[in-house]
Image (cartoon, rainbow, N blue to C red):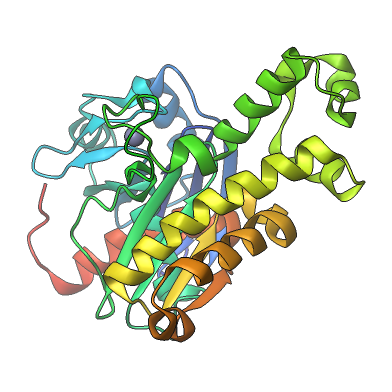
Length: 315
Ligand SMILES: [Zn+2]
């Protein structure tokens, strides 16, 4: 039998589902990663079954989207409609008979970094997940700020195209992986010369941000331009966050930080031009240290936080 206390942490994003068995001290005992399913509920139950071992203290669930904390549902998820309105908490609770807690996926990543990662030494920081979309979580005075923190849907362009969320000119329409790929496809369809034409066996619709970064490193003009433009847009968002919240740190997570040397560097440069100088200089902009595990570690910590303090779960 296991002597430590364990919980299941789930990170259900727009692209990947990660489910892990995590100990109270944040160590991952088992982990499974899959593509985010269309049949969300059944797939979740099945994956939890795969990972679960022995008794667990509970299940923490981080999901991409705006969370209805009162009813344990997802109000809206522009990048992952399949989760909208599902009664996930109640359903999982019924099946496994343990407490289930729901949070936004980026909020979970912020909790993970706060407890075990790059945020350990800060009282106030903002975490951004840079992936298919852009998520955000805010740690304020050592705790997760109970706010939507939909940083990807901060408008950086008042007159632009509409975002699926209903707003116009959202940050993630310019600075996310989806935005980069969309731009690559448009430019290639227009006949722009680029190494990207040759990747993915010529199927330009399969281009990934990794392909764009690799081509950029090899000197491909279009790829460099895509990463720089996305980086500048991210920098506008960072400047806004810095001016409004003056955090001690901004922690960047998600697949796109692999392109740090072009994309993030450009963002930092742009933010430095725009934010109040003194506030900017006090902020550390650093990468996540838990990487892809931040979400599952943070989600599992929801369980330990709630069971440790014996407060009534909000759900
Ligand atoms: Zn939006």
